[in-house]
Image 1 (cartoon, rainbow, N blue to C red):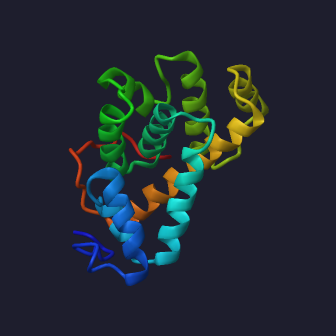
Image 2: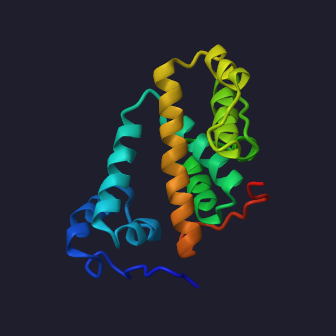
Length: 184
């Protein structure tokens, strides 16, 4: 049972959130429950969508963003985000089941993507306190300082949604995926 109200429709959402929610619906074909929960606060929705747009304009392609989202959701133990990003990873980024599993485990079949996904998972587990060696490894894989910051943006954005969904107990409106572990 959800703990924070999920407006049943865009029209039942706060008036100041409705235009943004309609834009989400136009982009995705529907308005997932996460967006309607965040839309309880027009300011939070605006911030979330703004960060998402910034990440979309970053040097990280959509497939890498989905890979990172899967790793972060697995570490955080967020079934909603795992479900959403497994679906989006398959249907929008073209990831197969083996790649999704690797991403959830903090890796990838692509060596360069593996470095970013591993670094993202390390950031979450260490709450940002990564070692010099961990930072050097992601740089050695070819990521610039700007891209390292963008990986951190992806971590922050996904951590926000993971926390929203765990606090709210948002009803999952994607094919359900269960986290295999939660952060220590």
